[in-house]
Image (cartoon, rainbow over the protein chains, first blue to last red):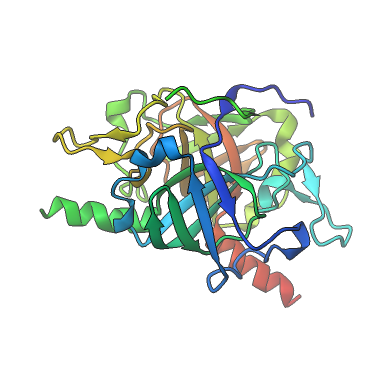
Length: 145
Length: 145
């Protein structure tokens, strides 16, 4: 499966977590009460965070930089039962982008303190946006101004 | 803001919607009762869909191919009030990746019929995965096997 490169991504920052090896990362869904993590944006992008404090939940997109990209099927439980890559949330995928919905605890300049990440320390950041649900509520509130 | 390219994305398919111009795309959050849309995966990737039928909701990542990537702040309502790009779900962002949670209606080979998309017809597909909530339920169910 040699797939071509169609567009380029730019890393906009770095995620810092206590998980320094893949075996330490919690399984999906176990992270709501997990440790505080830091999302450190490139300093020159700090103006793009304006207004983010008003959202309780943020959607985070990141690049799973250690993941293989060539698997169409895989067996994450190691039980010999292969499943299609797109029916899994495994990091191994053609475009290894992880998405998480995190709780925003605090902003400190270009750094966000959050809870709810399960990725490795040093994971490159790709995007930040208000979580869908949180955003819909905000949009309605704005409409009533 | 000239940002470097750090990694390459590969387009894994194409999204077909009835929205053929940007002005036709519904606003975020209005799409749950929207039209049926088709997600057409590259035929050589079809094995990677194995097992996706068991999920009611799928997370879709796509490349907003017409979007500017150089805006740190923007005024989506055109009211002169600039807000940071990362506090908006606007398509205009350094890495213009859209995410949606869609309802999977049917699979037909390498094509998924879904409801809940708001992107332009012809939008390049980047990733598909079980929706977070849907996946957690499934993971628990599997654990009880």
